[in-house]
Length: 192
Image (tube, rainbow, N blue to C red; front, side):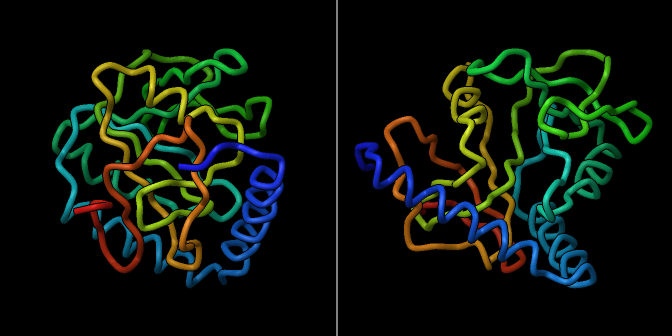
């Protein structure tokens, strides 16, 4: 991992813009097909959790809601992240397809109420990712803080498209490594 510098911060900011643009360029039909492949690979490869947290798909991120629906048939509970304070770990509220959502301060659909849950698996969207298992998010550090704070640490599963794979995201000291990465090509454990 490299030390954070202004050059690295600017480089990662530019990479983030490029990665979001690559994902946004996917046609809707291709996006739906690739998301379905991700769901299929996740169902085949991942251990079934008790509580699975996921992110509401924004900015053309993979849509993995079908995975939560499939797991729900086995009693797996789903949860969505909630920003409870700036620069603090996330909390998670129970989610079902009937859950009332409202945009949070970032415009992300978030449960307006419901039971607080602690996930044992978190599905993390990938703006960018590398073979070493590091992800590039939106730069707020919420998931890195959350993964570092939760004990026991939940299984961290990155879900993304191959168009967002890069050689390295130039991870910083605080970046948390993913346990799994699932794309339309399959599921793999970084370093395995």
